[in-house]
Image (cartoon, rainbow, N blue to C red):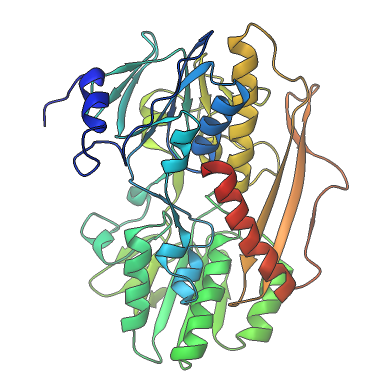
Length: 427
């Protein structure tokens, strides 16, 4: 497909939504009286969508914002394990980008293929390059399949990670439904850091919940490359023992080194484990566009940032959000944290584009809810404040904590959190 000009692109987008390259028709924002520049946001997840919306709101329309997102709709990774458990559908966790246009965000359904740091231009797959004054990169994670022997392109067709909500979520649910009663589901967890620390353990609960209802003779084996459960260990282990006794087997220090999709086995340093369904999460790193743009911190898989503004430590004028960042101490890679990153970056960029310094002591917070059954939930929460001496965000003493135990009351809180944060970032 030949690329078209931005003028032609925007003109065509209003003609017919069915053929538009946007995920719907653009609503052009009113021209601001004193425009101060353009920000392009790559990635419409918890970080990018939030930043795009709040840049328009807090700048009162004086900053032009383009949001580049390859997918037609937002699908939430947090809560996607409930689809595997059978209590929610993909429709329940899918939201539209349409409301962002009401704030004047120009949502382009396209894919960023390169960033020219010197010329301040983003190359796109379907339209001409776009210039920017400042750039936000919120690319989430990509997966290092090559770190596991045998986890090649062919194996990936049947051995799924389903760690980006979407088609693989549906496919993994179908594998669980097709599995025989008495079968074995194997979940392999990589070494930390990875996206959503409690997510794999929640997934084990949700799969066990489904088995308990539909395939009670079946088993969940967790192969964790970490020494122990990395998030809410006591609460998860209590749930496994009390709700799914004898159904979930946890093995720490069990890093998967080899996948054999034909034999349906995985190998660790100690054992070969056979399963009916293999769900292998590879090691993760910052998304491809961040790596190709040279945004990774030296000798790491992640992007270094100035925590006062989320500005890259590798390239000025580029801000990095969410899971792709080299996390501050005790900071999880979570949707809630990415949402906070987006607001921190939006506030700082508005100040910087107006010739002012950003806030010298930003404070952000995180909460992760985990469904251990269809209705019962546990959580972990933390507050992080900038420490000028250490030049990073640190946990505020006494402002963090976990649930005293699982409860249905927190189940209501957990789903309300999801609906509220979706509204905060998208509507």
